Image 1 (tube, rainbow, N blue to C red):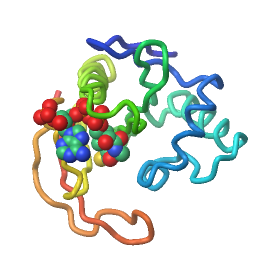
Image 2: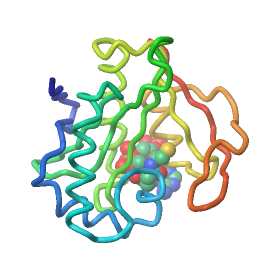
Image 3: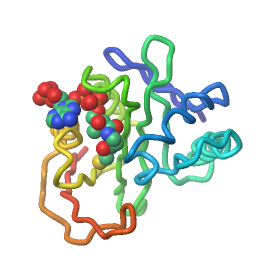
Length: 172
Ligand SMILES: CC(C)(COP(=O)(O)OP(=O)(O)OC[C@H]1O[C@@H](n2cnc3c(N)ncnc32)[C@H](O)[C@@H]1OP(=O)(O)O)[C@@H](O)C(=O)NCCC(=O)NCCS
C-alpha cells in the first residue's frame, strides 16, 4: 500500500529511484547522515539502497517513509517508525535539504504526516525526539501540534557521543 498525502504546499509520496541525485546532495549535510540512514559518502549505490530501504519500511510493517516534494522536486523526508506497535506508540522523524529550509515546508510536511498517522495510520501516541540545541526542529514539532514532555538524558548516540533529547508527543 502506498500512501500519498497532500499538505497545504507539499506532497508526501513514496521514494523513487529518480530521487537518487537528491539523496546524493544530502551526504554532505553535517547532521542528516548522523540521524538517518542517508549515506555519509556520495555513493550512488548507497543512495539507491537508502531509497529501497525507505520503501520496504511499510511492507515490512515497521512504519512509513515519505519523500517530501515541493513544486515537483524532492526536498526532504518525513516518516514514522513503530516503537511499541501493540501500545499504539510510534516516533516521527524529519529532515529537509539545506536549500529548502526556512520556508515552512517542513512544518507543512510534519503537520500533514502527523494528522494522517494519528488517524488512518492507527497511531495513538506519536513521539518526536529533539536535541536541546535544535531550535528549528523544536519549532517544527511545536507548530505541528507536539508538546514537550521532558528531557531524556543520554538518549542516543549521535556522531559518536551520547546525546540528550527532548521528548515531544502528539496524541490522537
Ligand atoms: C530542523 C529542520 C527540519 C527545520 O526545517 P525548516 O524547513 O527550516 O523548518 P520550517 O521552515 O518549517 O521552520 C519551522 C520553524 O523553525 C524556525 N527555524 C528554522 N530554522 C531555524 C534556525 N536555524 N534557528 C532557529 N529557528 C529556525 C522557523 O523560523 C520556523 O519557526 P517560526 O515559524 O516560528 O518562525 C531542518 O533544519 C533540518 O532538516 N535540519 C537537519 C535535520 C534535523 O535537525 N532534523 C530534525 C531532527 S529532530
